[in-house]
Image 1 (cartoon, one colour):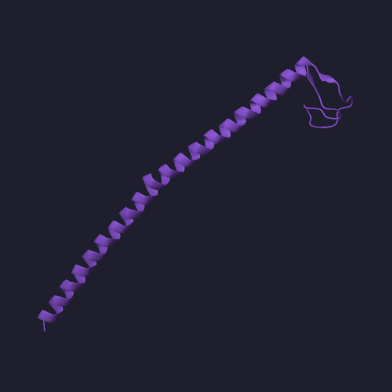
Image 2: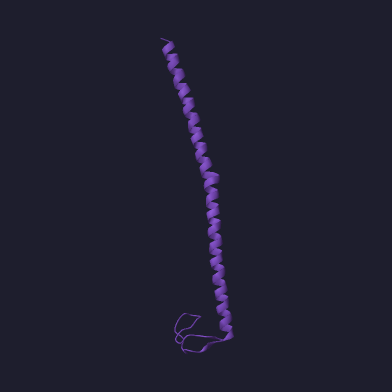
Length: 97
């Protein structure tokens, strides 16, 4: 039997109508189940947080950074092609005078 502090009830965290009484075994089992459930919920939150962090890192390093570098590489190639087009037009324009 688990004894309750006078004036408190462990199951409802409220005022117990009969302070100083003992909790029945079924109440102790319910209290243990509530504790185990709270522990499992806390562990699930931790596991889902870690999973979320891993997925966020995978998204950043697997998709966003490669897409950014691919875009920059495309813009660099486009700038090089544009430079040669402008240079060719300039050369043709100066030679045709």
